[in-house]
Amino acid sequence: MTRQMLALSLGLGAMLAAAQIAHSAPQCDSRETVTALLADRYDETRRALGIAGQAAVMELFAAEATGTWSITITLPDGRMCLMASGSNYEAVSEGLPARGDPA
Image 1 (tube, rainbow, N blue to C red):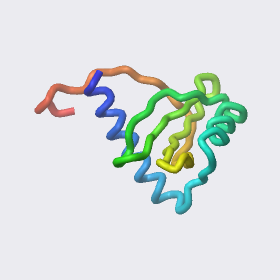
Image 2: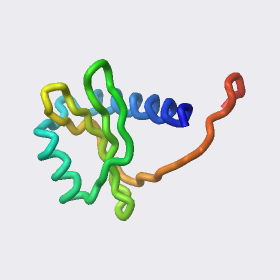
Image 3: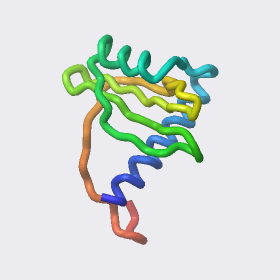
């Protein structure tokens, strides 16, 4: 389980970095407003979360039916920012290669 979380966090970290490059200014609002928008408009629910940096919380929201997904960051002041979004979400559960084994 720990290896899966590490892989997920590394992958999400890379996507966040790419999203920051692709979008110069993330869209932010209160956490309540953003989560309501994701639920009402896209039928997305929270699928994963983690700590980003020293004080922010990263969350992955997705919709099984449509395959849409969104990655958000909640800042210490309570603002939630949409960092990336896309389509074709698929939950996977696979083991990582053992240390030293080529992938």
